[in-house]
Length: 121
Ligand SMILES: [Zn+2]
Image (cartoon, rainbow, N blue to C red; front, side, top):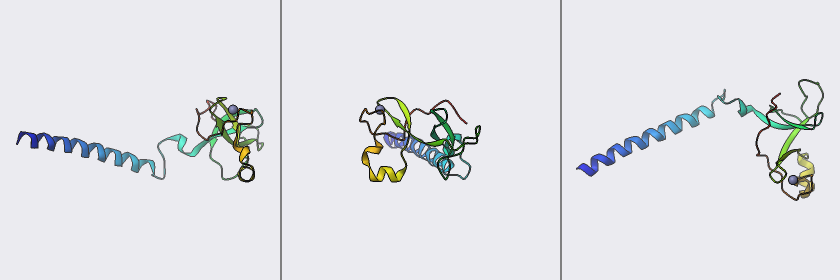
């Protein structure tokens, strides 16, 4: 009887953890995301040649909110050089697989994941 009782307690704890997880997951898919980063992405600013964080756009290049010039292009990250680079357009990448490599010539494939820059527009 004692063992059964302990199991029951365990199940209660597990179901609580499961419920909390479900609730958190439900929040994330809600129309207004609690995290600000959810509607932002990393851009490479061709004007300043720096990586910046800005709202996700439907078309690229995106207009820089301070200069009014279309200098913001999607950025991709080189884990070898630890640098954000301007992403080549999708049609270029489809035609030329090497376009997805680091422009610095280190031979590393660029990824979309990397440490986000501190500059938020
Ligand atoms: Zn590189």
